[in-house]
Length: 141
Image 1 (cartoon, rainbow, N blue to C red):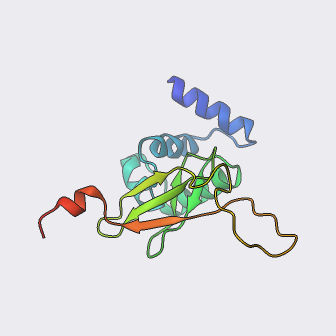
Image 2 (cartoon, rainbow, N blue to C red; image 1 turned 90 degrees about the vertical axis):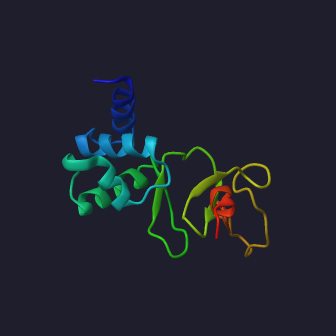
């Protein structure tokens, strides 16, 4: 058993989840492919992949336990990543769909401060920057 799986297994157990092969496989795949959707993760796992519904269930469990972050760019399936320790944002290429992390725009979480209703405590801000990545901008038209 590799060190990564051991630490992922410990992480799962510490979060109150059993360290199943499916959960370990999804965490490992997300470490290699952040910002992936459920279908991409299933394809990445290959022949031993659980059903797509099982992948969705695993991702829901991991998200509920705070082990993965879920975000939904417009016109796209929900994406998942393991970077959960901050309130960063994302830049999405409108041509190819590439997603890149963007660190907090202003200070610490929630990284943005705007008018909110009285008594409303903002815990997180989700910002998605849309544009064209370097590769798509450089590609011949």
